[in-house]
Structures are given as structure tokens and as C-alpha cells.
Image (cartoon, one colour):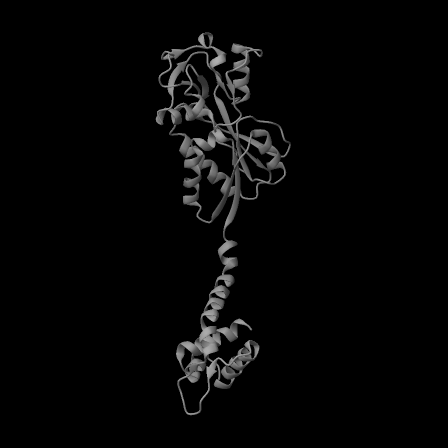
Length: 303
């Protein structure tokens, strides 16, 4: 059974006449009859009633049952014939990000990027900085957004923007509009190791022996614990704004705060899709420049 035999049968069934079907297929009537006979032999059933002197064809009971199957066969064949055109034109792009960026503006960046690249297939994951480096090195992902830079010889680490760190607390907490590290009790802190500059700042003001009330390595539980009495945290400004807009946090001015957090993009050279990389960087820059307390880094060098 092949596509020509199926197409021949469907043309006969639709036209209702062997001669008309032969004309539509641009073949002779004997050739048409040969195709039909071959299909019937393979199926083991006669598909068309043959009576002398009758011009219009009639399907046998087997032909009527086979008709919807033949139509499905034709549909599948047509879909399969377009697989290359449908999928080879699409470009896969695998991107990871630390979870704090996913929660804030990455949810805006990905849709904006896809609008201008409808032929791109995004595969997204959440990875810590050290894991992202290894997956870039192993070609498991194409791009990664991280906040703690490391050194991998073949992995480019390009700064994209610098983000101010801000003090947040429960909306009803007792803290004033301005707070300083000297007046903060570390036993009420929700601690997340945001970046290396943040770790140095934290060690300077609170030492290494005092334990925070709660230490987290991801953002999934942060919002719930911030509602505890006297709980406080120092977080990136984008996340502080996100919490404030949801009514889950109050932002206070922090004196002697940590240095801004820097976000970097990772990729391995040579990058196979330089145009996609540059367009993705431009999308990030166009979105984050609208955020307060975020300063764009020097434009990354292009591949």
C-alpha cells in the first residue's frame, strides 16, 4: 500500500467516476484500474462495485469502511511531508536563570523575545550560578543568567546590569522609613546569599557566628516567612518592587547597604547563534532599563 494507491482510491470515491478520476490524476483509465486492483489485492477486499454499463461507481461495504481510513492515511502523509519545513525552520534556544530573576522580569523578557522570534523554541530552566557554568561547559544549555561569577576558561561571563539591594519587611513591621545595619537583629533576618558582594557586606556587619532566623537557597518560601513578626531581609530592588506591588512587603531606605548585585549572561565560545544572542541581550536591556535602581552595564561585546 502506498500513497499513490490511497490517493487514487480517494479520487475515485470523490469523483464518482473512473474516467473522471483518471482525468483528474492525468493518467489513463487502465493505469487507474491497475492502481485500484493493486490496492484491493493488498487489502484482500473489493472496494468498488463493478457492473457493466454503469458509469457512476459505487463503493462496496468494504470500500465504505475503508474510506475514512484512507482519508486519515492521506492526512497523516501530508503532515509527515511537511515535517522538515515545519521543524527545520525553528531554532532551539536553551536558557537557564537563577530563580530570583525568573520571578521578576524574566517573565516579561521571554514573551518579548518570542514576539520578535516566532521561529525560536525556548527551553527554560532554573539553575544556580555554579551549576549553570557546568551546563554551559557541557553544551547542555546555550545561555545562562547568573549573579555569582566563576572562572571557566571557555565560558564568557558578560555583565548586563547592576541592581540596588533594598531592605524589606512585613507591611506592618515596626521598622522606620530609614534603617541601618547597626539597628538590625540578625535573628529576625530571612537570609539568602544573593551574591559575593552581599556575603562580604553581611559578614562585615553581622559576623560569621550569629545565625539568621531563616536561611533559604531559593525563593519559593520567602514571601510566607516575610510575614513573621519583625522579619526582615535585604533583597534585589526588582524583587523588593515585586513584593511591594503585591502588598506583601514594605520597602525601607537602607543606609550602609551592600553593593549592587550584578547580573551576568554566560555562553560558550564560539556561540552558534550570534544573532539570537545579541537580540536576547537587547531584549533584556530594553526591559530592565524601565526598572528603578537598575543600571545597565557597558554594552556586552558581540560574538
